[in-house]
Amino acid sequence: CVGTPGVVFLELSRWRHELTPPFEDEARALRARLKKRAMLADPIVKLALPYKPRYWWFEVFSLGRRFLLTSTVLAFNHWKGATFYTVLVLVAVTIIEREWAPSIDPAMGNFSYGLSWQLLMSVIYMLFLDAAILSGPDSVY
Image 1: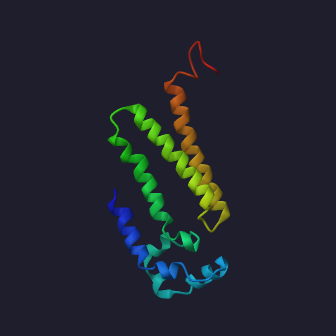
Image 2: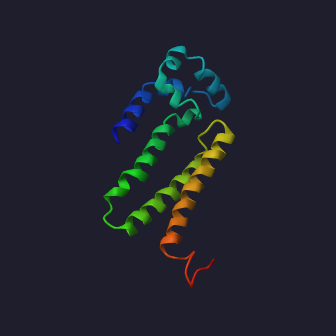
Image 3: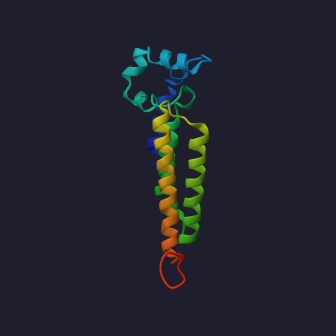
């Protein structure tokens, strides 16, 4: 669980200077990092290439998000705490992904943002079902 993001981060951090060339212009930095043949030969680097140079580590963040939503939630002993935690993590990650906009491809960034909202709305929908808001005599639907 924690080992995979850690190993990916350590492997990517070996290439952090090549993944983030010292150019102010982002387009120039993207072109420069695609010229590093030794770096591109390492298969783990492919995880960092879809992201802007300063976000070379974002795949590790994504793996951490998955860990927080699938494994850490098991530490709660009651569904109320787990639900609050899940909504809090989903809202935080949705905001962070939108504010940082780490993806090079704007279409992929928008797609990822839409998926984040879909996850959040599915949790809210399940909360509505559990609270019987959508069925029964007092339902709003």
